[in-house]
Length: 210
Image (cartoon, rainbow, N blue to C red; front, top):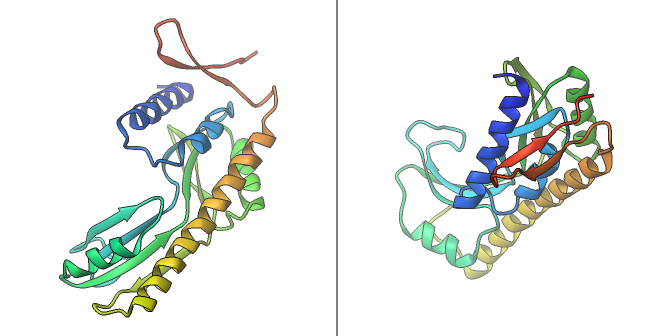
């Protein structure tokens, strides 16, 4: 496949994931803005989330399991219920800011995406690799929280913990919306494409390559 075919396939996957409810509930409009850029598309992106992981250490994947995940926040009831289920290792409350993986067709576009992202707080961003899908740019904020949970909390402690976790998550969401606005403001007739359905009701990306 050529680069444009990879982009078309990625766009179809996003629409399919959105339809079946697999896509993060608040990320579609941001991904759509990336796809409106002629030389960019995204894959494997996340709007930010709160997870509770049972693991010896929070970064370990082996012998670990995610026992709670929500992209929109956590409640006191969620936290109490999850803790009450017990543990094998340790329970870690992890708040992660948004992460976007963008493939660009050209080096110029990769640097433009990095410039836009860094201007709105995605400071931990860079070019990861180059392959047949394009130049892979990872966009990250510094928004993150990792907290070792204990088995017993006072009511005040657990309310405070939930409030802090949700506040950290909101900070990431705010940066994501700033990124969306910055991307929209960067669009013009030379660097944008149209996303629309064809006569068979299939979503197509309309390019003007002249």
